[in-house]
Length: 141
Image (tube, rainbow, N blue to C red; front, side):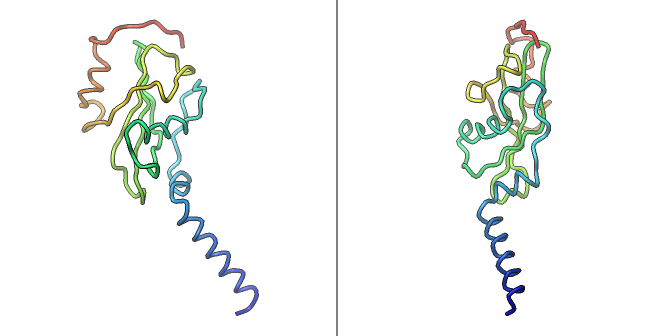
């Protein structure tokens, strides 16, 4: 083998080892998070990393931020698409929720959350969180 061919083969093998050795990094490159909410003081990655702690998922779980929902009553819901290795298709949609806190004060470990059942509009827990049964609060955004 020529020296150039050997270098090419070595580079390809190193790249393959890197890709196979860090599948979650590849998933983050090919499936990036949506733009983080304006005013969020912590990186969105801290919130997505909190998903595997809060929902007892494997550290190889990739939670991709997809959307923010806010309500006039101080409700803030961060939605994440959850994928497990090999990250080919989403397996669930989960959310982190807070009430009466401005976006800048959100702490991933202090938020509640759950798994979306069906779709967001029909999920009973999300419907309850949006309902008049929730206490009202005043926050400035």
